[in-house]
Length: 248
Image (cartoon, rainbow, N blue to C red):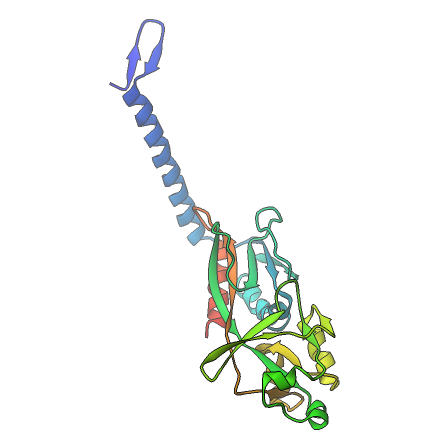
């Protein structure tokens, strides 16, 4: 029996209460399934808010977004570049792109890229100081480096089977990798920069890689988004696009 009936009242039995509770869950699941099926046949639309670390956003993500918008013309994108940690929920971001994993277990992390931090300098710098043979030698040279919060203060390299922690000199530091590269091009000092920022400059001989025998420990770049029962389609197609463009 699901309920007790009297001439004046109709009350649920314990079995009836359990039935209602379980039925509510089933109805909620059905509603979610309908939304999923409906979305799969709809075109993604609305605004997609993305927060991205500055260097990757400037050099890699921003140039890739026009093609994404051509594929999904009913989406609007708001891209904010900065190196501070953001609260996706409180600040109403859909996706955040950051270097390294986060400790927040409520977020889903999708690896999209692997960067390598390398030593570089201008040809003029190399003519003045020569080519260093070790990290101990390069420490004595002028430098211009990127430090943003705790990121960038130390970088790791493999050399002769060992991991070496290189503490970055902070005599001349900036929070923008692009600004660091521009200062490095003047010949003032060496820099430590992500490979994707200096690839063209190395190919055009505007910069030279120092200490190529020191292999950088790779740093993963992740796209983070909130864990929820049903991920909105606009987020799914964006994550898929990032994997397509940067996964190789």
